[in-house]
Length: 346
Image (tube, rainbow, N blue to C red):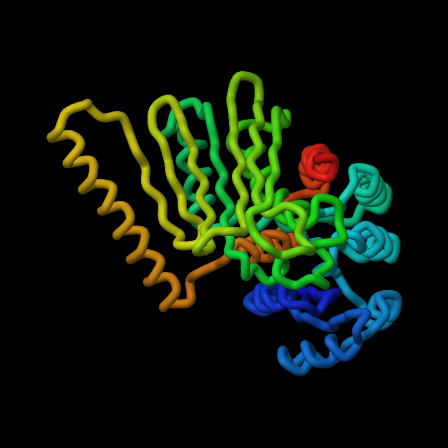
């Protein structure tokens, strides 16, 4: 089996998860790192025992004989790095948001089609264990027809991006929300359907950071006669990600961070039924928790990033399709661009 050689550009905090994910795989070598701050690349290379590091992306491509470039830089740079890699005959995987504009996202898709390289985007919440289980239940028809989804992404005011006045998220369209909104967008597309329409979006400010314009967001989306709600806050007492999926036969409430879920099937409106239902709900949470502990202690736990990287490598070897193709990234950016334009005009 040919060893896949991976180069990673961007040596900030997020790259740690990507490097760890690649290193878990057999037949894969993280061959080189790159960052415009070469000292950051040097430190990260030392931490992960990677021999080569560069301060220039062109040098990385020229000297490392790579199969894949994994892009962990700010979204304003994604298009240029994706295009440059593919033009050089190197496959590319990028963090989300794929870009901050439809124009740039379309250019990535066009270059991918022209060069024939494999190009994907990291939509990692789709591959978190609880969401994978939810997708399985929905595809089996356990919930019946899905009529609503609610995504609640909660964080504290100490969020590392929000609290850092110099972080790049404050300079992009939509600010901190421009960075995080792809997550609820692609979840809404997955469970409600692809033709998502933004019905309304409101933002406000509750916190006291002078460099932050908005830190609360609530949006309503629709797919035909189905509705979805997105709520994001940076004023929560704790971080939490809840995805609630409502079907005609059953409801499902998932907690991504704690990796638990509860299915609420039909029940009779009687006191005894309600009591039994409470016991069943508690049992589901207990079962999820026990399963999670077992997976973590035995090394069987895979995060969303772990799963995407693994599936991307498998697709590359089999000449298949990446877990999230850039065509899907483009569709998400179309909705993101609409939302961020509303935010910036508010």
